[in-house]
Image 1 (cartoon, one colour):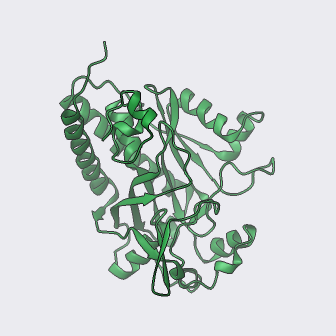
Image 2 (cartoon, rainbow, N blue to C red):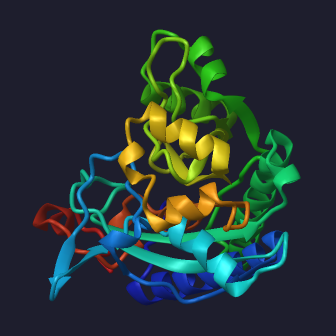
Length: 320
């Protein structure tokens, strides 16, 4: 019989889970926690354009336009240069954003909470092997946090696999050629339970892309998504989107492929082309997704303070 958890107990468990996971991130990736903005000047070019379709919430102060962030992918890289962060050390922050075009359901909200992180690397680290090693560290942080929480809260039962399975987006298309990318993710996630799909943004042999990615932060050959199967909701969920960031060569190539060369004169893009920013790896880790998974919740409203439709409340969710 499922145990009924009080609001207060849930709140305490959320805080405990977040703190433990953050300590794991700090140790395993060599990160320190910093403050971050919730809006940026549009003119800086630091806004993450995601797939290019989403519209940012914006406002004006005088003649200057500002946008609520979608993510901090570019801001973090600029900050690492400002902080003069040593190689193989980095930062993470509580990223809070509004994505007004999001389709809200049991794992999606208009309000986004991520651990946004970024780490300085050497140019020689821009390899698949380095990407995989970083993913393994993140996955170990998730698994260790789950083990810690089960010891503290004995009603939790999540049992994650010891290792994460790697597959490229092309290999996944070859494996399930008749399926959509979303269907492929569900199938491979349920089979392997913890999966990292490598290489997202460029066209596959079919002429389609696995998923759209902004051309100016991740290198499409050195990025990907971490997926974990959540048995409570019987879905494969994306826990993290991350990757090794573009260098001067891949930035120009991806802007050309995406017909986004109009961005090339932004200060951020010029700094990359002139090699004035460090080479980095980074990404976002969904806080609400981690909490749903580890605390075995059925709806994002049970772990996140946002605004929900009345029907969600009528379903009896513990709305935070």
